[in-house]
Length: 432
Image (cartoon, rainbow, N blue to C red; front, side, top):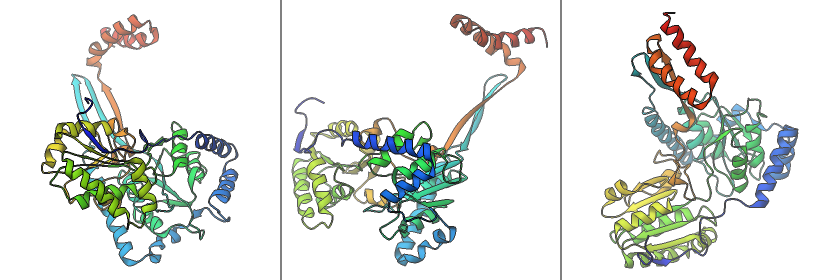
């Protein structure tokens, strides 16, 4: 981008994405994982007592408790949770229909193919802090079950009363969770990864969490798969002068509300509109109940930029590669066709990130942050299955494969590889 080709109306107080690695967090998580791997459930219970104020008893929630969790909820909330679970499952089922195994003959006698095989055990972390993420189970437990994963465990931290958050637990129940545990943070992820919960170690850990949870996933990766290393939630909007100032400002604050370090960015092709949105954000903050979170987030991480044309807006946004991207312009389809880097895109003034966040849009809200959308996609059915290749070679195809392998292996000096081909070639030529 050439200097001076765009105008910054509001720059964030901090430069670059929020830091995702604090040395103190890294050290603490490393010590915890080492202790749990060495001492097993004794260490898990100690951390649960110290960090979750767990008072003893069974960490596992019995099936009756899970099944009856909805009884504690307002009927309207229960209905909304059921709706979110079904819509997320419906989108996952539709996605799964496009993950189709196939078989093809590359050359006569050489048949190759792919079979999609679900993982066997998945562990889902369901956060329940200041803002319990009720829809998290839709995106993790639910989608894993649609993918065909036989066993899905879930861990969620206890509330101040020592019980699980009923909405989070009910969301896990309607999503098809197999077993659920009252366990939070690093100790929850470690217990699932190390196979301490009456199951073999999980094949994959999924779900959002705080900095300690994110670091635990980073350090456990390799021992188990993970969905992604998500940082603070982000939103970005491309809007022109035809957009609604009030709606755009509200949508920026809707994600800034996630946390003190949640970035929110507007790129507009209309200077007056951009200035108006910046002013409207400040106006809405004055009466917003969560302004103590959204306000500092907007001050420290919010930005407003004016691009001279839509091509520049696209280049700026592709460089930003946001987690959530809203398009509110007179030509949304043009932007959809030209943008490349985002976690999920929301087209038109009637779309908003919250519809996906709460499960109503059906799409998954576990998405890459901090520029990760340049190279990675979010969680989906495809992440819970393995595309396993196979090949079947008939005798007649031996010369087509063995002769070239003989030449390549000889050039590399790999005698054993060469022999596997030449022995078969000798048998073929001898009519054996």
